Amino acid sequence: MMKYFELVSKITLWTMDKKSESEGKLNVDVTESDSRLEDVQYDFPPSYDQVMDQPSNISRKIGWCVDVDSAECPSFQTSATPCMDRIEALSPTLLPAVPFDPDEDCQMLKSFSKGIFGTDEKAVIGVMGKRTWKQRLDVCEAYQNRYGKSFTKKLSSSLARVLIMRPQLYLAYDLYEAIHHTETRSSSNSDGSTYSETVHSPLHRNIIEIICSRSPEELKDLKIRYENELKSKNDLIKEIKKYTSGKLSMLLNMLLTETRDFVGINEQKVQVDVQRLNQCDGSVEDKLFIINLFGMNSVPYVKRVAEVFQVHTRTHISELIGLYFSKNNKEALLALYECMIDRGSYYADALRQAMTKRDMDTILRIVATTCETDLGRIKNLYNQRYQKTLEEGIHKHASGTTKHILLAFCGNPRS
Image (cartoon, rainbow, N blue to C red; front, side, top):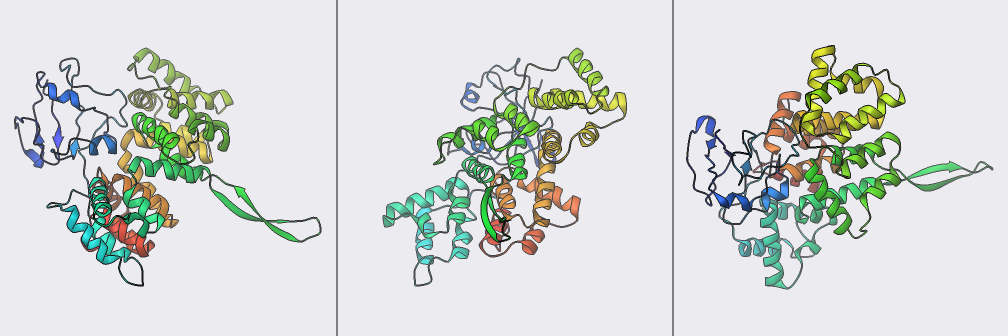
């Protein structure tokens, strides 16, 4: 069997056997004897950090194809934890700056932070917003070495977080903020007077989007960063149990505790589960069965069950979810299923919803964590679905520093 990658930028480390260049994609024959492949861990789809942590002497924009027989190619170590069955080539909107001179960049940044008016953040974004995350770290290191000061201290905390935090740590920070979100409410005393109180109010939509749209490998990394790199160092599973409840809490904990079965697809078990789904009538036991189906099984297995169920009953599994679940439980299950089918499509819809609600935190999170992987494809899906470009939405709903950083990460040269 032909084993190949779809590359979106040139790799100089490996010897390539060019097979075809149709549609602008380079197919590479991977031989069993190429032991250098063992140095790379493969995940479907690759998490941001796995893509960006490749050796510095290779271009890091790699797309994956699932047409690989790992049994025939022992040196090609595949993960059994795909996020979706169809793997798309990466389509970053933010590529490494070439040429790149961190010393030159830090001198420019120094000139932006002089004077009585503080730092010109728009000018900073004009430089740093066009550098990849690792290049931005190089610039900050050069700035520290040259001037003996941290450049990030000159920025607002929100801008520093977007520009400098490793994307997976950024996700962990946003997850913490969503779990521990509070709001002020007015209450009345018995005598008729009013008072204000601060109450805990988790942002369930954000929690669902962050957890349910991630692959098992990404969730494992997210959990490690949440528990070890944030100042709080709280246990994520304990926090989910404490601040969420019911079936949502159960599902999220299944996803975070690595309980999913990745053995493979047992067709007999598929038929049993399809029959069980067909018998569902909305009872508590039926709902728990559906929760377990999504939380305890691999993506290919759930997709196979959904496919067979639709053939037998002419009912889409998402209709079943909509019929028997509501609010957060429904949203979490639909998010899981949509990401199994096409995570880019899920993000396009999430961006649209965030635009209508002017939820800049969600827009920033999705754009900042996908701009070096697949934001290009997400933008295309957004445009096709809503007949507007993502940039048009940003111009309409965002403002100030947030607008400039979003446009820069979207690849807008005039941001």
